[in-house]
Image (cartoon, rainbow, N blue to C red):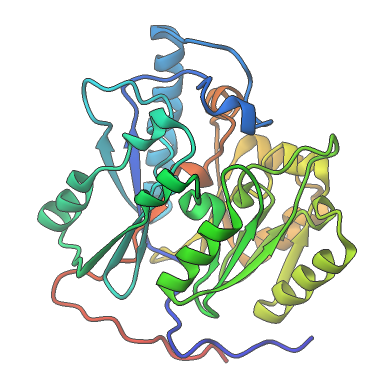
Length: 328
């Protein structure tokens, strides 16, 4: 299939700045465990577990900064029990038209992560411009959940949102979010080898400007699998296909970012080891991998480096959104 043209409202696919939330507590969240097969059921942690998670968090932020990414770190809200606060991409997405979106969350103890104060901080302290806040959180009352760019893997150039159905990604909520943002929804089912739904789309799919990483084998329906393959191939030059074992090692939970020295790939060391040699060569040809060691976070929380990064696509004050030129 030939490449499809960019959407008239296309925006840059990759961000050069990301938000990271430094946690004040950390443990395997019992409220999220039933829907997250990647998460180890360990229970309440303690000071030692938090210290390990913080060391991994700080090292990951430093590694991305050293690679030329603008990493903005804010401490999680004080006085609240927020074990998954380090995954801000589930409650927040930002867009080049100066829109921020707040999303409905499944676990009650994750809903308190949504913070208008973070948006105020991005504007007042870092010069980002915000014209609209789209608050989808009232959908929670109806049981309609869509957890940010965990649920919605966005092709920002073609205005396509890929989403796999799960307890965290209700089809009606997906439709509501896509209608509000002007995206076309591509919805499918994905499961692990035990037949359990993949809880977030971004653990089986990553879409960047140069590379897509996809576990197509996780789609049991042949028609949905082929439609996803064709859509990905139409949108970019390189699709790296991974198997279910590599998905379990969070090989798709990666994020392509922009830097002054060219595109980089945020990837955990666990995932980087799980790619085979041929896959690593393809990734290294297109991108500069930045492996970060986050074993404690991955094991106890069931999310990886992509989950820890909320891309900042908002324009800076004094700059206005322009549709980027088509890539030739």
